[in-house]
Length: 115
Image 1 (spheres, helix red, strand yellow):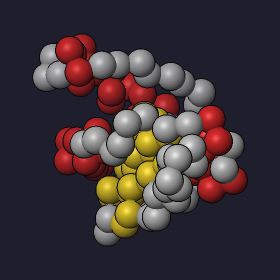
Image 2 (cartoon, rainbow, N blue to C red):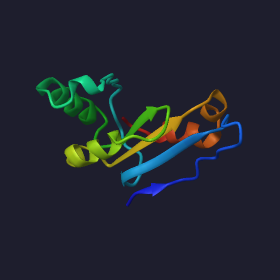
Image 3 (cartoon, rainbow, N blue to C red):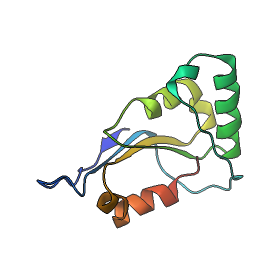
Image 4 (cartoon, rainbow, N blue to C red):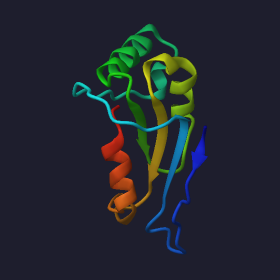
């Protein structure tokens, strides 16, 4: 079940952030520390698939979170569509200012993420 929460916009957009849970429910799990930095140029390659599978397995079938700015994209949906059996949930968080990054809700979304 997907849900979109309020984006908390003000006229000056200084507190702007958006959160979209594309798949599943957020829960806690035990995971191994891992980081995956990957961009769109790798799309569809064998290396991208192997790296993504490795990364998601480190999260122990946990909660996947995409951090970005400039609005919600389709990365969480792509992960849910292609790796549903390796995750519990997939979400995106777009943070567009320092003020928004320091909001308690934003901090909690990041703390709740496993991948």
